[in-house]
Length: 220
Image 1 (cartoon, rainbow, N blue to C red):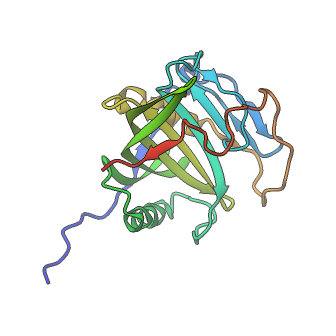
Image 2 (image 1 turned 45 degrees about the horizontal axis):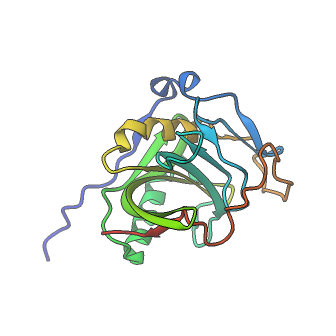
């Protein structure tokens, strides 16, 4: 059998200075008291709070034009042996994620899984094609889109920063999503505890299970 020609993964670094965070992000706000603060992109709208998301930002504040947008989610990092992604294990984490995505067989990626360090935050990044179903009144419409995923694990919790854009617009908005991840401030270096979510914005009545803005499928 011929030896594999797959090149070993190398870490791509994006410095805090190159992102110019002070020009891209607002002051941070509390999401989980004592644990997590997040800074929103300047001049982007903050969507109403939902138990399904840590935060959601829309480029168009009226949300009538749905894309681009950034969603942040958190979930237990089930099945991962990595408690926190660090500079020492980010390559192993990216390899683990690539294997997981391959096993899920949800179609080829537009950009393969890469280990990164964005400012001081190690993560894995990939891009895939997707399709969203948007509901406008009684009408539904399907929109083909691209989804950049930045994924990391902190203290056993998996955090995902997703950038949703129209095809061909990843590079235009990529660094804003990088900045959002870099601006996440994890305040506590102990096991997470249950806290009451911040109520800066009201609960979103449209964020129930079956939210029409969730991906309809993963297109190959």
